[in-house]
Image 1 (cartoon, rainbow, N blue to C red):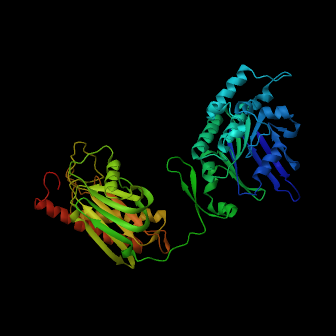
Image 2: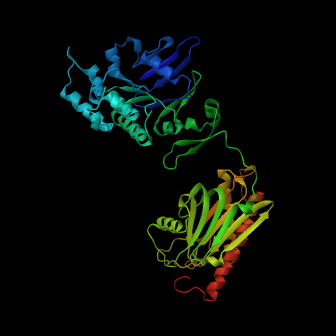
Image 3: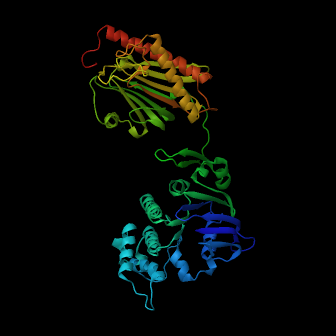
Length: 497
């Protein structure tokens, strides 16, 4: 569709663009990325003829662009720049009508019914139909940008060149605009060549990207190129951490500002408070912890400050437990946006709390345990099994700095220790009579202060992994024994209280 061959050019000598090559395929969304001053807009001006090409060429459908007349070029290519200046006091509808000019025939160039229908269609798509009779100078910068996009679409180009198309737009209109463009690309085969500044937005919408630095392409490839941390750091001079989008297979990037510095080690024991009542256990830290969990809320990997285990009735059932947990936290003035929440029917006064150092590593573990719902995960589920009192909820906090991989290691180490405690106490699945591996509703959270030297492993072959195992084994073992003793003495009534 559009081929750039050994392109050299710019405003002066030496040239800004230094011999780049690229091919934008028909029907793809191709994005040009790079810091300010790297030459992105210069490339567009060389393509559109606003700047002279010193050497090399740009081909459109196999023909050098200078060979196209202005009218023929306008039928194939539309351009949306960052500037939203219009010399005359046109209305929005009149601006969009300019997009139909290349397709009009005859000396008078009058609008046809098809032209008007198409104009109304693109105004609806850009959500500006209500502005059609408004003078262009009277609307906001974001509205102007959407008007000029509608004008470009009214032009019915085969390729659309966009220089920061979301300039002046808020988040809502940014995504509306890019969704509109993506739909035109996918349904009508529109080729899009865009300049974007936001790397995460580029990842979400682009098929391929080109990374530009000082007038040269460092790399051209699919969006997985954005996972190359060293390359991005070289181009943008910022610490960048790639991660996966939570719902679609696209990378997203986190930037770390230079002002962030590692804080000195803290007094771990003085960094938290524990409140324990018959209704809940609440651990509040004075700074967020990086956490991994399967809680009712606060699940996944997050930064959290509050960690709660709520007591519920034995027969508790709700279609939306997360809403219940949020309601309870609100009642107790706990900000649920910064919190982990789990629940149990176990008596909370039987919780086991261990605070100590193992191998010089400060650890806090809180376990509530019941085994009425004990299961052997390797056996087939009995659909008729009834739920009784019993879940093993584990909170584990460590004054250490884990990578994401170490977080998973730590979770596995804690689970291994829990299973060992269950086995040593000879807890069995009441349905299968085989050795239990846990309960059907276990919850676990592991929180790290992220202070000190970074640790990449926390499995059973490491000091911290063994520390996790020892603490969780002891806490789980003691909590289950408390539960068994209470059941044996008949101190659970029919409500599980």
